[in-house]
Length: 420
Image (cartoon, rainbow, N blue to C red; front, side, top):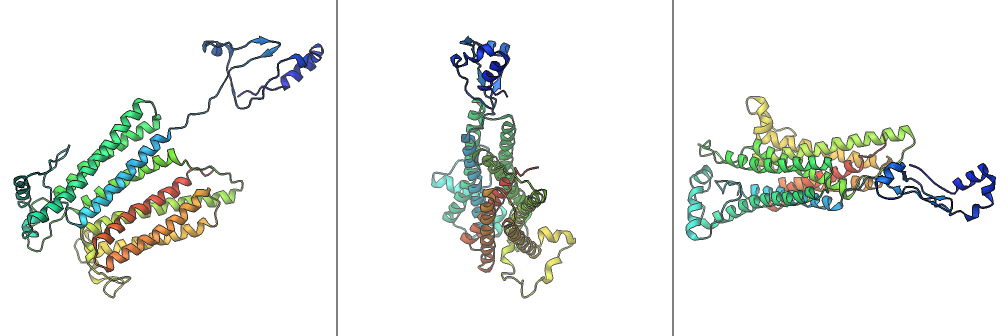
């Protein structure tokens, strides 16, 4: 960068005394700072006169090299997509709680046709009657009851397809208009792939509940808890990536200056703890998917003890022992309790430490918000357990897990530009 000022005139006056008395006749120079000086050849190629002698002054064409900021419209688009994924998770939770997920026994990429006439509804109902959920659990179901669960699953699927359209169409527009940076283009390709994979994984999950593997009268037809956890986990990953990228465009992280090495070290340790807490929130949410997949919330509906014991007797009832952690409802609920309690302890410590660390201004707000949402989430979880999993409360608890992850993500994003 080159700065040009009146200092040039005084330097010339000392070098050439005869010019000094005529200095007042020279055209004054403006003070420029942080501006680019281009060689004459480069300036001439821009079809402008690089240098021009006028009353002894020099006119210079100045060019700014400051990087162009990404448009906020891209950030708002990403924020809208992440919001739609949030709604999809909520709809998926309600679909699971109302046991509607197995009502549609076919899957088409571009969408299934909704029955319009009574005959079409009878045909659709007849398809459902061929699968284990109806044979073993819903043999007394009426057509009107079937319509309700069918519409629930249909709405969830159509919302997923709407997410694909809301992402793809603006992505093509922004890409063609050159509004995406090279790094953002790579992210867009990843986001699109994850959206497609999420749809395929959703059907793969539903298909596990339609398989002919439920033969006993006590068997409960349900989707595989492994596939359910994978489906939810992928949705969480997609949501966090979209939201993080939206934050990059809309509320970039603030940069602060920390002069003391000890203070900087403490702030960076705080950031590491914040990332650890975010990981624990994610892990606790995934464990909640196993609770939902096994209906583990319907066993040991007491807190803090489980049937008057801190550790229930049947916690390791399955063989091999390792399967208890993913297939035994008692163990799955116990693990979810431990993870939830541990995560809340980390959130509490994080909030307390935030009062004592030098952080960006918004990071203090994010830490306090995380604490409030964390305690609310635990309260909803306990309420869900004690009230035997009512749909409104359980759906709020499932939604709260994603809200808690959002606030943890916000906090870590605010800390991304701490000095190195």
